[in-house]
Image (cartoon, rainbow, N blue to C red; front, side, top):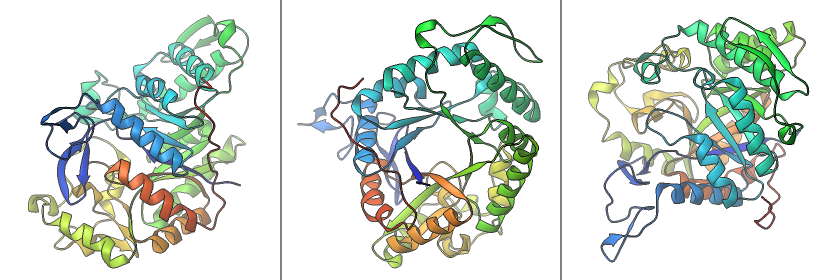
Length: 386
């Protein structure tokens, strides 16, 4: 079965590198010499926007062999639905994995939005269903629903969305949603239902994933822990007669030699706040984040102490925002670790690198061709098929 490999498109500013936290890609910080979209031309703003930068990343990753891009969603990012609609015309077969929290949309409205995008893009919408990490970010959205109830709400949301998508009026009377006679407009009916990538590491999340996920999407963890989590998802899926598939979100720092890759980490490590090396910081109720931090033996004194296994490094969150674990090594080593994950049952990846634009070319051209597993490659066509 071909392996689907996505790239992450930052829906916010991007760093110049892991060595430097200065955000110089996108319009979220002052424009400086070397900035991209917007940049400077003759000392004046060049008129390009952050959306232009996202389009550059989408085109670069499509040309480099990725089947699509994840559009993340946080309080500080652009909206991924609107971004996907804008970026679709910049690519040809590229899929858009839209991250969203079901609690902030009504499922009937989500069905109509999705069907419209499917119709307009030729079926290139993919869902990344997230149910929130709790804490201040969750309250920022005005959401006070408890952790496990958020997954119960997500499960109802997907029941309604799927029911509306199918032909015929749909009735539902649940704990969170009630609809009567709901259906899509006739001209939007019959579109392919978006593939569901489902995130979450808690028991409540894994139970919901067993019911709804086409692919269970996890952050990278040490491989034995990841394998054990996959077994839990398989158990819950079996109870509903479903066979789960798995995907992993992985940051990648790959260079020609392992020494070059670790040198990048070493240079970034010089700027890490020592206060962050004493233990995990305050978070919401994200079980995935807490799991990641539990694999680290705090306090940490040197960056190599965060190497949980060969090439599996748990300090990425100290050099940029996001999950802790990623892969560091030569092109061949990183490809070998990805092949090991395929051996665990993974058949899709969401890869990322900083900066997203330049690293999309590097990883696509130097790492993906080394994978042993068959990779689904995009079939590019002339634009204008929208």
